View 1 (spheres, one colour):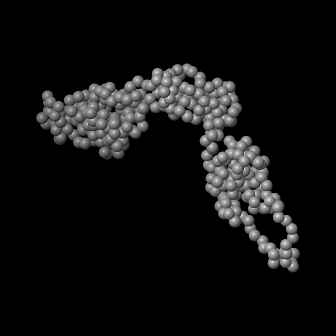
View 2 (cartoon, rainbow, N blue to C red):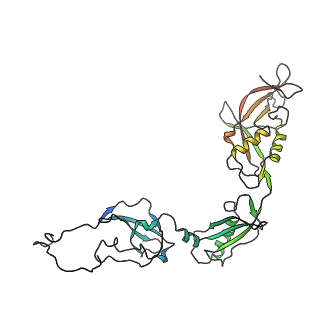
View 3 (cartoon, rainbow, N blue to C red):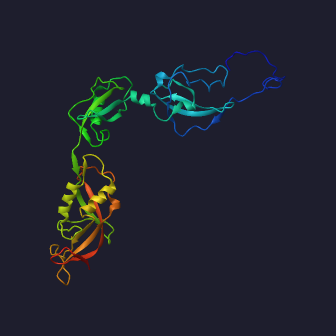
Length: 342
């Protein structure tokens, strides 16, 4: 394959038909083209570069490019595949999406579906969040980039604005922290991709979670209907639901911005006596509360459906929605907190 050995060998008596000292051979076989078409270089450099044919499968097959280092951040499209008959190595025919003149065969193992981590860093701003009080790093190695990022290039006005906005976004900020100075700009139009910035943050104060509304399933229509809890009573049959919702917010707290667990919510709501509530039953006029034969006021009992509690709500939120299931009518014995099923 390297042209070192050359000379004549007997090939038979008929032109175009091999016989005797030589036989024809296929150095490659067609392989299945992968369904994923876009790839990146795994380890850019001089190893596993592009060839005019799968390496050493054709006479005078040569390298298309000696080093792929300059193509490190480029993506490539695969259009065909072949397996070397002797070694069984899989090769892909690829074209550089940034420069279609760069095309050739490359060993499949030299490609990957995502960008090389080093290259990803080179096309990003690395953000390290540091606690402004303790000086300790609370979140590091956060990579923020844009579609127009190029390694070593200046961000420019638009990308700088985007990166500064992302630095302050909850997606990137460490949970439970806020920017120490939200008005600061941490990168400018002259900052280059691949740079690192340190961003001071301050731990959020403790905060509770506020109940926004309560709903129950209508057994007749199957629809979820909002409950009017203005005059509703909590599980003990004596405390107003509104009061216990306020107590829940005050008693169940965590660092603002951190996530409350579903089980933690369920326990706290039970402690606040909101796992069961009693909603007044009204006459047709909508204002007079119904009573039983003994003159005791009637209520519909609702039990909290803990399975529907959110799993991602954060402390400080005011959007907690509680879902209940109707559990029959009850009468409140006058002068006590005793609820008796009707």
